Length: 140
Image (cartoon, rainbow, N blue to C red; front, side):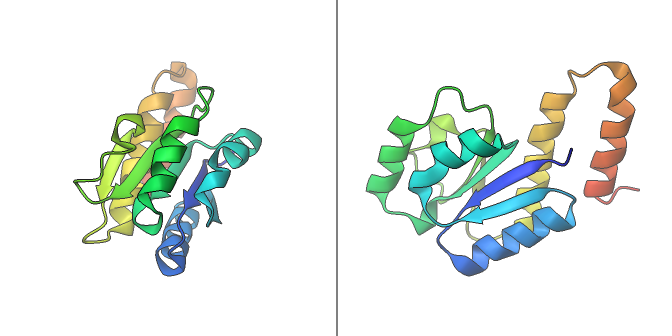
């Protein structure tokens, strides 16, 4: 089963670039423009990673989201934001700067988060995870 990544960005270009980078890396990635849908979408799809492009949304939307995130949400949250944005910082698993925009760095950060979670799998399954990560990070 491929890794599922949901990208929330109202910036069409940045969202599409990230979607393509994750798909190129073997992940199933979906792009949504409305940040208010994060709980509903995450509840239905059970993603491994949620990428939130905070520059695309109003601060009030982010504050509202921080209070509404489901406690059952098990996905890693990767924030794309400026260093001074702190509304969702406590909820994030990782932070990636927006300037300069580095889609491959964002992908690598997400894969690292997923890999750290799956290291707890039994040894018999870890070899396939290592092979997948090497392929995704182009370390073959």
